[in-house]
Length: 334
Image 1 (cartoon, rainbow, N blue to C red):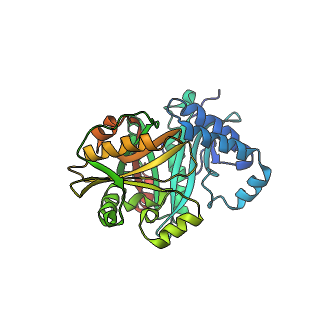
Image 2: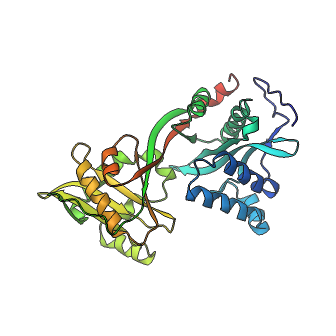
Image 3: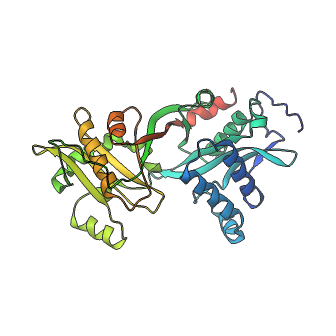
């Protein structure tokens, strides 16, 4: 292994740092990501790696992607750190649109264990940020696990600010799970509940992260036109409500998308909805027996007792961070 001397600052690319070449690097980047995140990778992550490897063998796709790298969500743009012909560092850039403006998500920031603590992650992230600013991005995002304080500190030094913390909870369906006795009733979501449900959803799933969501809350809206749309696109959404004495306490929606972990979307009264949400989650586990696993994302620290009472397990908590264009002028000083 050759030695690597990293400068504190540089305007020119480091000799070991270069743009990723999708024709020859995609498979090696997949191997590196799998190595670095093996301890925390779930089924979705493994499928993501498999998609990268499959794409690396599809010359037709790569030819197309070379001209469309800012319109697909696989990591086809980014930067790698190469030493003796071996890719040992990576930072991917995935394009999104927010309110008609271009933004980027920096993802898969990974450094081979043998090369860590040399400043490689910092230089890769800085270079990815510079690429985003050169493309006139309105913002650059990334996320980091809350159990990785070193990475969190690095991103803060680079100008990223924490915007949200969101925890993913997972479980398996269980048709034999007993429904606890309660005066709370579980009923189909009635159209009259929509206004309150929508208010809760807006608080729990803020618009600042809407660009990343794989679903649109409008699909939960009642009405004939929405029903017809869902019918023609063959999406069978299920929605339930928890009520007590006619008062709405919480709602739970299930939107199938064909993944191994189907998403649930919870909305609840902040003060009184924990018991009701637990009842809804247990009901969903009893009803959705055709699914292998269920997942739910929620603001970190909220309704924890409800998830635990319903038999959910915390999978991870991600800290979502954002840098604005003003950060560009500070990069040269970092």
